[in-house]
Structures are given as C-alpha cells and as structure tokens.
Amino acid sequence: MTAVIFLIVSILDIVWWFVIIGVIMSWLVAFNVINLHNQFVYSIYRSLNGIIEPMLAPIRRFLPDLGGVDISPIILLVAIQVLRIWVTTSLAPMLGVGLRFG
Image (cartoon, rainbow, N blue to C red; front, side, top):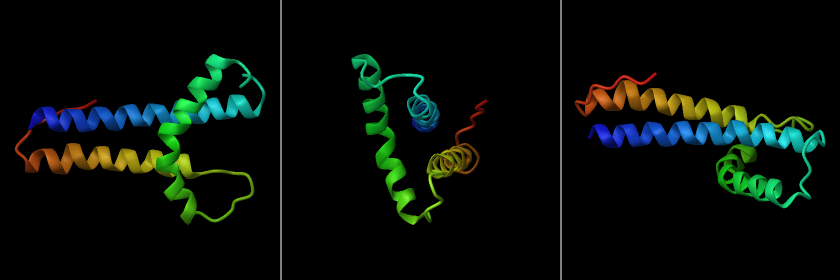
C-alpha cells in the first residue's frame, strides 16, 4: 500500500510542476520572450496545454470573468496541494502506511 500512496503523491507533484511550467511558459509567450514559430517550443507548449487544459477547463467554467486575469491555475495548485496533504495525513494513516514526505 505504501507504493500506491507514494505513486499518488508523486503524480500530484508532477502535475504541480506541469502547471507551474505551463503558467511560466504562457507568460513567456504572452510577453514575446519565446516564439511559438519555433517547432520545438511549440511542441512543448502544445503538450503542456494538452495536459493542463483538461484540469483547468472545469475550474474556468465556474469562475467569473476577471478581465484578462486567469486565476484558475492558482485554484488548481491549491487543490493539488490540498489533495496531497489529505493523501499523506488522512488516507495513508487510515491504510496503516507510515509515510513522511518532504
């Protein structure tokens, strides 16, 4: 059972970093620091959006229009962190798994 909990926490950590990298990359594209005409940059940007967008779309449906400010990644990051804390503090002890994650 320890392996399952560790896998869940690891997946949550990877998704956390995908969201952070996706947000930073979208800022770099918006401020024209990186160019999407570069095939390598475009493929990374498209892949990250393909991973992140299905998680952000349901959040965006419920958010009011804030006029160009998108806080859905922040809400997703908070939700990931809450889920990670719940898994390590509530679910793991309930299953008899003693884990310590940094």
